[in-house]
Length: 496
Ligand code: GLN
Image (tube, rainbow, N blue to C red):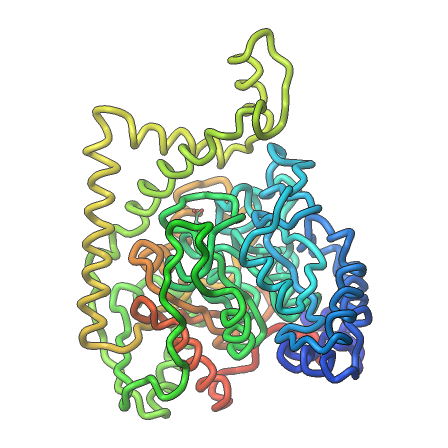
């Protein structure tokens, strides 16, 4: 779909889906819109945008849950996300829904419980309308590895929406919901946000509970929100962040106060290693954001993080061993597709052969290899040392700079098939996002304009990175840029 056909599918000017999550919750709380009408509008929009394949399944209890929100409001409860329809990535458990992780292995797996982040959204009055399409087990950068077919980029249906939280990004970009949840192991919230023209945030590792998030690489996985505004990201973080005794890596540190926390003048470091290999449109977007920061009084200079050159290699040598160990549970016995076989081993082998797609199998093989005796020191331990160096370089840079800036991706959305035949080309697409994940620091992608390719304006995202635990401050900075009108409008394109 190009922007013209997007606008012909535009929402009516009275649709509650045109509102930000904050305004929609306010209207629902004041009784101007019922939770049922708000959820109904989202379900209708999901049907209208079905060709984008953003959702793997709908929540059969959505309307009933909207009714419960109405009851709670009538009882006088204050709900920050009252009646706000949301979509969550299909690797987050929601009791009573099917959680597939985009894999045949888990087709039909009914969640027996709800992930903490999702439960917190519900406690705040949000209603999950469906589960978002994703790369299989969150491995990929385009949603092309989904067993349910790829999601399509609303700006050009011949292009990927990014991955792995592609469905979560498309649901927001196409106006199905104002906010969604994705998960980010090496860029999976930030890169699809950039490719679809929305905001996406990866919190400090440990900020949001991973309880109920199906594990990919446990030392890197973080749940993060996607939204059409930085203000809505902050609203969602206020709801989902915080300590959870059910996740041993959950941080027991409160979100710091948002206001007045930035030093003045703000010291902005542009990461030198991220300045090469970008398309002209990405380079122009970066210049625009830096100019906007300077206009706010920031000082901008370059900083080098030399070890980030090895970040992609280190990321794939750390994430695949973790994934190979996490995915061992899908044996077709306790979990996953059951397949017939002459004995236990044959049955497990057959379940895995049929249940997993090629990329997941490749990761299991790579991860097992990197951990095997004789190769462990050469690969896994060396990658862990690179991870240390990357983290140290970020820490050192944050002694001189308050915030670091890079593109979110060196290029806008690529075409279907352009990278899927070449795993290394696909991995290389993560060049701007994985170092942040290795260091565990917070980062967000902001929409920063468009690059025209093949006659389609394609959104471009710029990444802002902050020191560990400075999540709120980072979101405040994004809101300042947004309020200043210094960035072009987010590209969700469904307005009048
Ligand atoms: N593209 C990266 C990978 O395939 C990141 C995935 C993610 O963040 N879940 O591992």
